[in-house]
Length: 367
Ligand SMILES: *Cc1c(COP(=O)(O)O)cnc(C)c1O
Image (cartoon, rainbow, N blue to C red; front, side, top):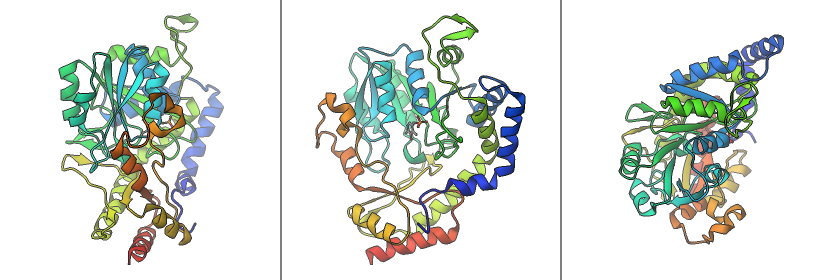
């Protein structure tokens, strides 16, 4: 590929000195789990998200799962999830022993449709997980209003939205608790797996600190049947280095996305991302919809341009969820999105010339 979909090597080359220093510091100290680096990262990331607490965990899926556990949501309970999301959102509910109940998205924003949530609520519903898909926040005021009316918890899946704004307020502090992922390809990525929970709830944060560490607050004293899901010192140290860059990187993403938005207008079979006036997205992905998606992808690949489909198969059509008996046609909006989306290259280290080349190729395909 002349223009790869994502090239983390360039980013890491840029930060090689700082990352190597961070590695050496942890190595020399010889303390690898639950130490200073984690404590410092948690402080710094809580400040970044403007929340009271940050609790580092092993990955984004665990972050969501542990939040549900901390709220005692489990067997017999229902958790409302978007029908179009990465399957991890659904799996978090399943891990806790609860049932994910999919609600269709708004076709313009791809995020869960607040108007459709109410019809899915039953006496067993305990929480709503709102995903800020592709880096753009869901309509959180509307979602919080419904949750308040029915006494439900609101959990943000902020895996793709670090730094994203809703009416000027930061993703990660827009519900009761938020799960973040530091998977390498995310806007803030570790050099391996990592995740975190942000919340303003003191008691929840205390419980989560136990749940991630065998249910223990004081070593060898186990108050809960906890898990082993910790953000290790190496990853915390690397994330501290990268956190300094996040605002700059997100800004660069916005600049490049604005070029795509301006230059790709007016192609009949292509739908560009829609940004409501209350959203200020961080463009984790630049996703367009095409009625000729597969052909377009083949054309771009033949011209050396890497693209990815996020995501090719809807969660309800995955073998993992065959027990829900939701066959093809049961969630048509989500299925349409899955059939038509394609993500174009967008990362902070992409040059303006590269983006221009992608635009030229997309236009040539439609000529
Ligand atoms: C990446 C991602 C997750 C899971 O994060 P991991 O760190 O890979 O476990 C969850 N939800 C969404 C929307 C994601 O994009």
